[in-house]
Structures are given as structure tokens and as C-alpha cells.
Image (tube, rainbow, N blue to C red; front, side, top):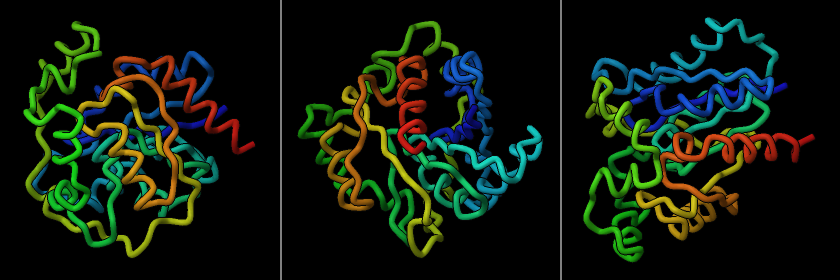
Length: 228
């Protein structure tokens, strides 16, 4: 069975993984949804990485377990740095913000042309309900919105990505065809430009772990099996 380390997107709220964790556990896996202090101005990106490592220790994950690290959206700034610190079987980037060395999360949007991509896809004006929660069940969307309202810190957008290169770790990208934040054509282009990878595509929006946890678990298991 596989140990999955689940890194959330902007704000660092582990509640994003609330439906995927039990689905993976039902299949016999270990799933750890990490609470990232990305809303804390005092915490930098290396603190976020250490939080992931500390979570593994808290869950008694053996040092040689070689987990699968899954990083959602802005979590892609954290996931590769975790992989540089411990043996990892696979890094999976889910609807990701794929960073370049020295780039900040704030710079990423213009550097990748994300606004133009949204405009071309017909989603120029942002609406949180329409763009984030359009395919998330109403009760789950309400629960997430009723949470602690985390917003990513200014520091998390201003701190340069510290790696000089992508870590030497097997990497896969999952792009959701219904993502209205990062349209799938945009994800295909950025994945090719920055990692030379063609994404695996599946149905769902940006918050696919909430809207389609079973299908996402299927895709994660398929990626792991493909490495055996």
C-alpha cells in the first residue's frame, strides 16, 4: 500500500482533502492531509516544507517509506522542495502552479500568461462560486466556505522559489478538463514549457479532490501502478 502526502493549495487548509483522505484509506492506503501555515506572515516556504516533514513524523511514517507527494495548485511551490529533502516515489502536481527557479508565486501569474488563458477560455471575470465551486457538492462548498477563511499571506506570494532546478524525482501532472482557474489548454502548455511533461487529464474543476474524490483516487493509483 502507498503513503500519500497531500499538500493543499493557497491558504494551506487541509479541509480541501476531506473527501480524498477517507477514499484512499478505504483502499488501504495511508493519507496525510498536511495543515500548511501559509496564512501566517511569519512562516516562509522552508517553514512550510518543514511542516510537511513534521507531519510525516507525527504520523510515524518510516524514513524509508518513499511516499507519493500530491501538491494542489499553489502547493506545487512546496511539493518539489519536500521531494528534495526525503526519498519520494512520485510527485504528483494537481492543477498546479509550476514554479521556475527564483520566481515568486506573485510573479507566476503574469509569467505564465494565466489571465490571458482564462480570457481565451471565457472566464475573464472571477467569481468564486462559478469558478471554484461549480462542480463541488453544495454541502461541501458551504463547509469549506464556513471554515476559518484562510487567505495566503503576502509573504507566500513574495518569496522567490528557492530551488535552483527541479528535483530529481519522478513527476506527473494531473490537469482537470473543467478547471476554470487554470484552463486545461493552459495547463498543457505550462507543463510542457516548464517540465517537458504532458499532463494526465481527468474530468473535474479546480477543486477536484472535493468534487470527484473517487476518480482522483483512481488516477493516483494508476500513476503509482505505472511505476511498478
